Each structure stands twice: as structure tokens, then as C-alpha cells.
Image (cartoon, rainbow, N blue to C red; front, side, top):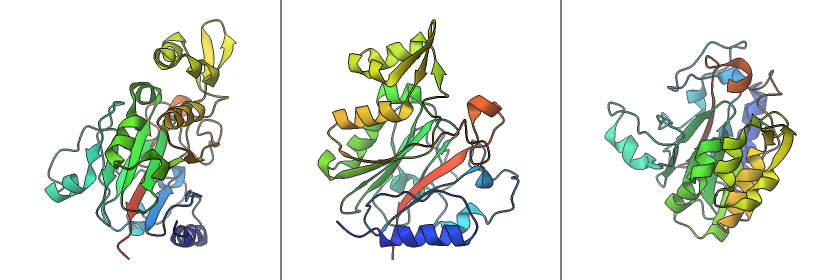
Length: 255
């Protein structure tokens, strides 16, 4: 497997710029670049920049091209970002909750503010993908759909779990528990009883479980909480519908 030196370089550049953005720590091939922004580069649901507390460099300065933004609908559709980019920005945004790309400099992106962003690449760095996985998407199979779009044996795929609401803050009802346990009773282990009719759900554990059941073993990331880290992240559940979104992006570098 190639050294992740290029990603380390990206992390150093981000840090030197005074940004608190997250560069994944995973053994991705050197040509695969990825990052996840924080509230200091907030975007609205359309991908437009929002005013923030700190005047940071524009996100697009760090990217080789305009990201392929999605009209996210909490479903399982995964779009071909290469084809979308070729059609041009005049086309409507694809209604999808994930994207994949093989072509260098095509940037796959998802926007989240409590939902779980998941990035994928293969060990050869020939394909990348990003998925937006809230509880509905997880239960419906958005991660499995992204893996299918990658079209690589699961033992050759790496996944990284970006910042999401943590297991001590994500209170859910019986409907969420039932949705995840319907075809996998063992998923109940990812829920902690809280009070009558309420549980604390662990999106990270649910994602790892679904990925592992699909045969994927190289799973990295996790451990952050968008809800309980207000200085770093926006949170839909904490701040309401007008909160910003964080962008999680991945691409294959052309050089």
C-alpha cells in the first residue's frame, strides 16, 4: 500500500494555515486527498459559504475543482461524480446521498451537521467515494450502496468515518431502533436504553457494523461528537434548522 505522505502534507498545510479542519488519519494511497471542514468554514445546504466567526481562506482554494454538490435526501442513491462534472454546473444537482469518482480532480462531497459522513477509497487509489449517512440512510443501506459503486472487493477498500453526533447525545425513539433491527437484530447492541421509549443511538457503531457485515475490515475515524463540541462543529439537533453544514470531501489528485 502506498504511503499516505501526501495526506500528511495536506494536514500540515491545513494546520499551518490556522485551520481546525480534519484531515483523515488513514493509510490511503498518496494520491487520495480528503478533508472535513468545521464550523469555521460553514456551508449551507446548497454548498454556499456562510458567515463564520473566523475569517478563514475559502474552501475552494484547497480543492482542484468545484465539488460535485448533491441534493441530499436521506436516501441510498449514489451518483457518478465524473459524469455529473462532465454535464456541467447548469444541470440540477443530483438527488443522491453519495458520489463516487475515478477521474483525477473530481471532488466528491457531502454536507453534514450530525449525520455521519463516510469516505471510501480502494488500496490502489483508483476510486474514491463519499456518503451521507444519517440514521435513515444507514438503515436503508446507503453505505452498502456506496461500496457497490466503488466496485472493489471489500478487503481492498478503506473507509473513514467523519464527525457526527456522538453516542451520548443521539437520543432516538422506537422507530429508529426498529428500523435498524428489522433485518439485523444484533444492531440492538448499538443502542443504550435511556428512559421509557428512548435510547441513545451510536451512529459510529451502526456504520462499523454494517460495513463489517459487508466484508470491509479497514475502518478508520470516528470518536468525535458534533453535538457536544460546539466550538468546532455545527449541530442540527443542538442549533436547529438554520445551522450551517460541514463539508467532507475526497478526490484523487492529478499530481
